[in-house]
Image 1 (cartoon, helix red, strand yellow):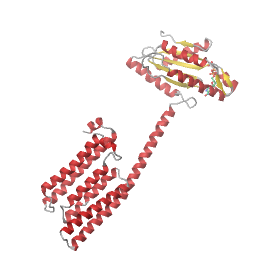
Image 2 (tube, rainbow, N blue to C red; image 1 turned 90 degrees about the horizontal axis):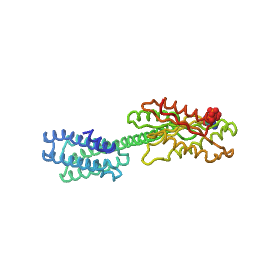
Image 3 (tube, rainbow, N blue to C red; image 1 turned 60 degrees about the vertical axis):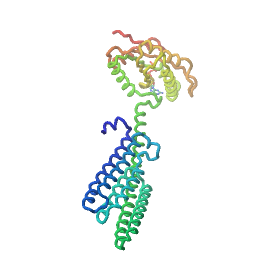
Image 4 (tube, rainbow, N blue to C red; image 1 turned 30 degrees about the horizontal axis):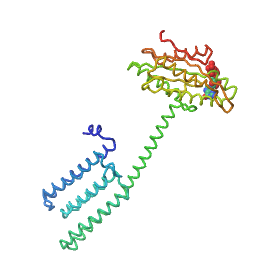
Length: 378
Ligand SMILES: Nc1nc2c(ncn2[C@@H]2O[C@H](COP(=O)(O)OP(=O)(O)OP(=O)(O)O)[C@@H](O)[C@H]2O)c(=O)[nH]1
């Protein structure tokens, strides 16, 4: 049953349905003292009456279950229908008590305690106090009607007064205690939400490079491993490029470290823009661009062969070289060199990176501002 519940409903709905189930269980449990009282002759209810009350209680719960399971209850502020269920339970309890006398009647006041405990699932103090008022008014109306009708003695009135005051004291206490638990629950929920938000922010920060906002080395390495694994499993190849700004040390030495940082940020945003550009028709898997360290960047291109990677990197190169970067120290000309490699079948990520790095070395040796492609054969 719970597995079926899990597959059909969302978490909140499952929880609400379970609560209604718990309500059914507590009604059924009350059948025991009720039946004993009927059997012992302490009740004028009779077996048909027991059956009638049980059927009414089950009907209330069935309606609540259907309203929750179909999603109909979601249109209300209280989609768990807790308040209507509690009001229905209270009315049923009042109706039932009418048929019990003496000791049995006092004991059955426990029904109200059970109902109020159920309110712990969601009532706040104000709602609890309203339920207490409703219960008290209902009880006074019932007993006055009974006692006046029976022309009861002073003793009978006093006995009811004792029951009534005990009922009111207990329900008022439960209102405050229940409300207190509700406030703790709300606080815990708010703390859990704040913690979840903080966690996701931390997760995001832990994979980002602080300066450029691109992915950091750790995330790039992780993604590279994932891509290798995916390619081994599904046979879909990928390429990788290591991008290195040319003579970045000169930019730093000439204009200062802060201007060097400005260049890195602008460089990153150009690469980011170009990385999003899709070169071929059809849906290409998302590319991962990051800062590998210093003035070195990396892009992972899933489902892309060397020729495709070259198109993408050539566009990046042209875009960077197109115009000098505007910095606080004036225009700075920036170029980069890149080494590209396509994964060979079953090649480990480390070996692939090694080949891309060797290609980058050749690009630098060859005069910079150029791309070099690693060969596919050994
Ligand atoms: N401004 C700035 N500079 C950095 C940062 N990280 C590394 N660098 C500098 O980047 C420079 C890299 O210099 P090199 O490794 O000699 O490379 P290069 O000057 O780009 O020369 P080639 O790569 O051979 O073209 C060093 O001066 C580092 O101090 C950073 O976050 N900000």
